[in-house]
Structures are given as structure tokens and as C-alpha cells.
Length: 228
Image (cartoon, rainbow, N blue to C red; front, side, top):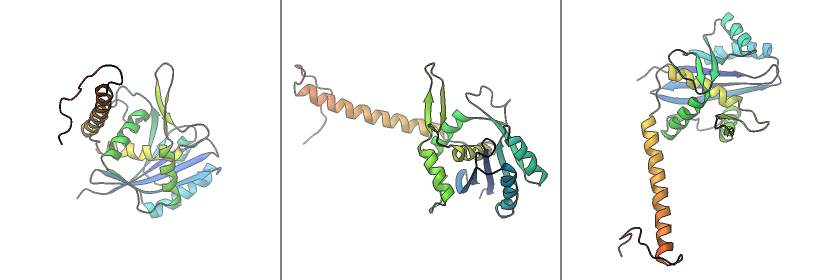
């Protein structure tokens, strides 16, 4: 049996804005969401002290935090208290993964999580806490945004928060560094199967319309669709 690793993703917002943490366990190439917690309108010094206290219970193998103006200070404080912390910068459409080991491609992570969810390798608790329920809610409204130039990004719409999703991504990013791979081939095969089924249904419907002479012509799309 694979060793269980406990990873905590931390997403600090702006000073006194939202701050989220998501705790996951990595076991047998699956991601188990253990818990999630958020702080809103709290000074980061208070949150940092609470994180240090929480670690006595969590005893995480790794904390992963997004580095920004506030993330740098949080990392320094947690490291000073003996917590294992990896600082990660975020980007999109990263060109060279090997040269940027501590840079997370947000678009790539969205695709990875989708693959893992389709493969039933992300497991939520049978009973949600307030935090895991909020994580699910934010995931349900995490949207694709496309510019007129075709650039794609992902995030919350309007004034909604996506800090829980980002904290979850950061934890999953550490899991990837640990060697958890998504079965992209199976995901693509699933998409192809869905497309083929949809095309078949459309062809059957169009065939029915054409056979009935709705458009003044008669064309049999499938020679024998059913056999009575």
C-alpha cells in the first residue's frame, strides 16, 4: 500500500481579504479531500498563528502556498515555526515544465482535475463540513473565460470567490510533483465516445426527418437502423 501523504494547499488573497486552506490526502494515486477552511476579513498575522496551531492536529507532510505580496510573508512565518512549506507561483500556458518546477499552470491544473474527477480519483468526504461544501460550490461556478483574441483562463465570475478552488489546485499540484498522473488517454477516449454517441443520435434524427420527406427528399442515413 502506498504511503499516505497529507498536503495542505493555501491560497492567500489580498490583505484582510479571503484566505482558504484545503487539506488532502494522497493515497494509491487518488486524492482524498479531508477538509477545507476559510477566513474572511481576518488579519493575516491572526491566520498565520491559527495555521501553526492547526498543524498540531493536521501534521501535514507539505504545505503549498501561492507566492504573492501576502503569500511571501505567510510562507516565511510558517517556515519560522518549523512547518514544511513550498512556495509556488502561478501562470498559464506554461511552456517548459521541467525548468519551472515551482510554477503551477492554472489552465493545465483545471484539465488535470477534470481528468481525475472523470476517472473517479478525487474523493470527497461522505459528509461535508462547511469548508468542503464551500469548495464544491466554488468548483461548480468556476468558469472558463475566453478573450476575443482566443486566450483562455479560468476563475470565479463577478464578485464570487475562488480561493477554495485555488487552494485545492495548489494541493493537487504538489500531488503531481509526487508522481500522481491523470489518465489523459482514458479521458480523451471518454470524450470521443460522448461525441460519437451524440453524432449517432443526431444522424438518426436527421435520417428520420429526411425519410419522412419533410424536406422534399428521401435519404436513408442508415440502411437498417432497427429490426422488428
